[in-house]
Length: 145
Image 1 (cartoon, one colour):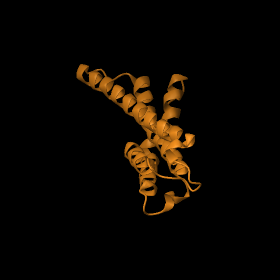
Image 2 (tube, one colour; image 1 turned 60 degrees about the vertical axis):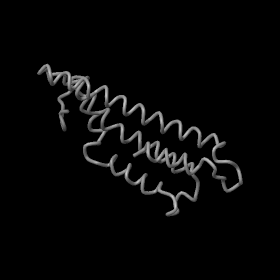
Image 3 (spheres, one colour; image 1 turned 135 degrees about the horizontal axis):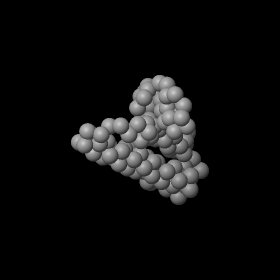
Image 4 (cartoon, one colour; image 1 turned 90 degrees about the vertical axis):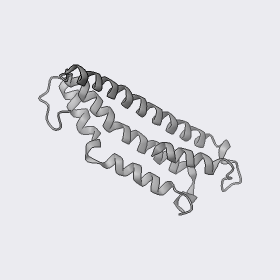
């Protein structure tokens, strides 16, 4: 969803002028927001692919007892939507005041990303508590993995 938002943001902003008549493409805040969003997409996808490859390897070998690593992966999976929501919010902000108009898709895209972040499986604080609590020798409560 974030990649789609970035693609549309770039397409719409490429030849757009700001309210002051400046080229949006030359705005450093826009450049930074787009770059951060693209890196966020790449980082989250890379982490998920790497984690799933490891999990599939463990499944094939019948070895599922890597509890701390599984908790780490669970946190990574739940934290990705938060990172995407933060990046999407910044794109929304730097687009300017006209972002709220129905002519632009960004409000709906941001809402979709926020909905994913809000899903109960993406409760990253719970997964951080479980993972780090286990690392620190605490009795693990809540979702185990």
